[in-house]
Image: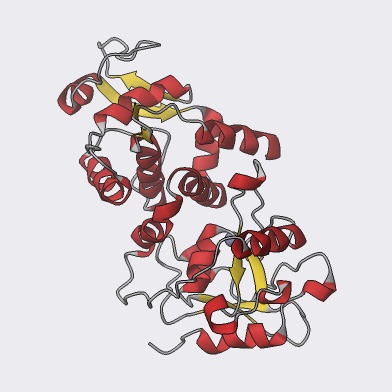
Length: 311
Ligand SMILES: [Zn+2]
């Protein structure tokens, strides 16, 4: 599925969006995140996405996080204009004609009119194939967030994990002087070959928008340690979860790069969105290419100690 994946990813990275000054409207990526959310929750189960109340409600939740300036939560705009990106179509109800005309520049019809004339929106088969597979869907979500909403990553991930009853621990904010950060990032991504050490996802379009991030094992503001053995390449989702001590790479006598442990008190594999985090428990850390860069024992121990198990 490699060629398809990169092809679809490129199309998602290049959504046609309205501009207000230099600000690009967040509507289309927010709509796609909302649809992914509905598929995750089993609300959408086939390639038919009606403009339902649940979709509108979910869109508003995402929109509240990503909107800027004078953005309005008008779902009819992306639901209609996404047709212009060529992988989404609106299927008319029986007796109605197609509502979207190629190259339409006029405003979108109202929600009421869309509901009256459109049965559902539908994706191209290739795109739906990815959306219907949990792992690919997760990667699409991460890619959309990395591309369009990198500053809102924590809050968007929290929407996904929001169902849990216990509050998340305060994240450890890393403060990085400019310059230092860039060098650490480049080194870590290279030695891990741009691969998440937890799930193995590896997406590079170019270095500036590689999906994978460089994480400190012992946070820099605690350790002042920028050595490669205190770092690990992680996708945004696993980086986020490690920062909150929901998951941790811990020492293991046989697997020298460590194994993953999860905080079972705070994660529940019956909850969508947490299942993928729980699933890495007991898996080995996907190691960097060279043994001299394996995580330091001290760094793995720090992570182990801070994986809060009793809550
Ligand atoms: Zn990952």
